[in-house]
Length: 353
Image 1 (cartoon, rainbow, N blue to C red):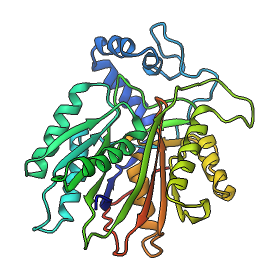
Image 2 (cartoon, helix red, strand yellow):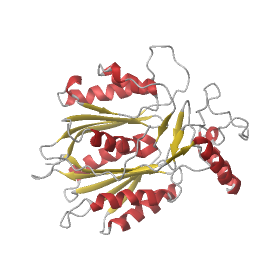
Image 3 (spheres, one colour):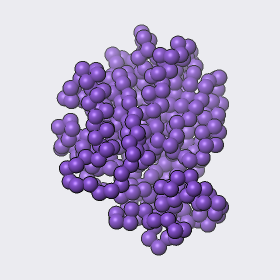
Image 4 (spheres, helix red, strand yellow):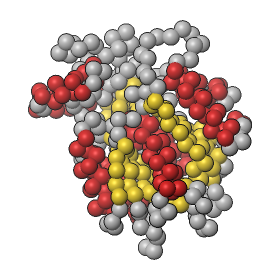
């Protein structure tokens, strides 16, 4: 059989600091940076130029201000910031954690998928190459970028397809890491701040003794972003697409809403999170509209690790995992606990707001 099973999950979220403290660090980094980076970021895509300077009074070089009609996040809010490691160091940290859980005679890792949100294509090749070296055995590595919080869902879809297309592939390691720094701001849109984090999931081909979270299905879609305000009660394209994807996956596996025991999502856009909860008839679990910290490509894996830790005794049979990317991507996955206890390993997983 080719049913993918998640046999290990790990995540790392660094200590949080006040946003005001990061603002001072960011100013110092910008002062020592190269002006050419700003020009490059603006030319890469018109939307990205708007996010280079988000604070009131900052110079935007002629670019429109970031969502000027929305309130900026409270500077007193805390965000996880990694100051001792670079992006590849964060990714290597969770790779080491996964490898530490494996038995000496376990199958070698065949494929590594590195998820991140950097616009620099060199990040993909250099970090993926380092992760191959960290694993210590020959493997194939590639990168999934530009999809932000939806990247792990694309990686899971690719892993599922690889198990079908490549009979010799048995073990796939999905790694996601984010480390935000100028010229890209941590501020994005209404009440969203980006934090640093890393996470990883080990996906293996189903075997007779393989226990863990079975990946029943996964899907990712891209929806054009519409930042305009909409009339109350009218779902935007992203919300409509995500709910449709969820219903499609449930129908394909003959499941009803009430048969999903745990919903793990990204609450940084309260309207989207509330729509998912309401869709399942769980309005009591709606998300309050407040500043939320988004961990980019690592967000879904971090929240999955936290959910597994909270439910260690309950072991919910079925879970729905969903996420989104600021570029318009949405993703969702159906997971089901196997007969044997799944392996969940966390290296001091701190809270993701």
